[in-house]
Image 1 (cartoon, rainbow, N blue to C red):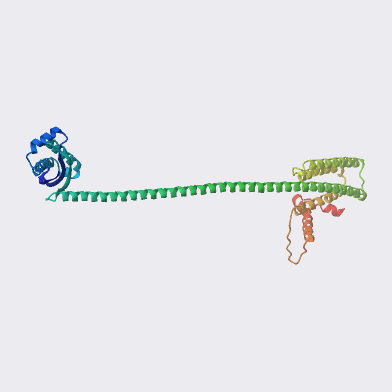
Image 2: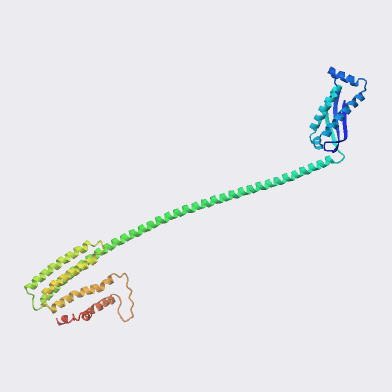
Length: 378
């Protein structure tokens, strides 16, 4: 038999009136002798409708009892639990009547107070709230993920920029190092070229000094020949010939002069590399000339004016040479003429001769001795 178990306006455990409709499948159990005997005792003289009514009322009572022990939320949300309770309680009671409950299912729940609707609205609101919260959280999470992604992108960009800057810095450092190395090599090459040029100039200077030493040696030789010539001239022109003592002293002086000149030449040659050949040669020659003059002074005491003239004639070329010496060191000479005087070599020669002609006057002013008078007398 199929029973429609209806329980209108039953107050639940919360005091909320609720109407419930259940569907039950029951039957008279004829397979078990005891249950069949119980059914016969209970329903043998009753019609099927009466049996139906007894089973329905029994189920309805148990359904109402279960509804009063549960809340609306439990009945509505946990129908399986409600079905289980009604099935167990009704089966225990009906089995004593020989009736077996095959199944029970809660078909419908409704109320007249709008509780379920409010519960649904609350749940709907809760769901909507949860939906909004979920959406907000989703947006938040999305924003956070976007922010994290943007941060990671910026970090990657910064790292990339940093790597590029580092690579650029390394390139600049290496380039600076290479440039420094190139400049160093270039400076070393330039310095080497400068040193080589200085060495070459030094060698040229040494050669020039050697040439100068040779020229001075030749000049000394010429002066020596000039002295010999003038001595012979004096011997032919002086009225009073030198006596034997004079000849002896002159011979000694000549030998000493030659020895000193040779020593001076040798000393000048030895210091040629050091750049001091000229000064040493001049010093040695001056020493030799001074010694000769001392020795000649003894021999020429009797010559007087003739000796003065000889000394003057010997000194004039030296004075002229010393006056002209600075001109030999000049690389370039620029002459400016006013149109009233000569130019070129004649101008330079004239300047030298003018300076030499002033020597007697200067000597007379400084010492009071007129060195031109004895020469004029002779």
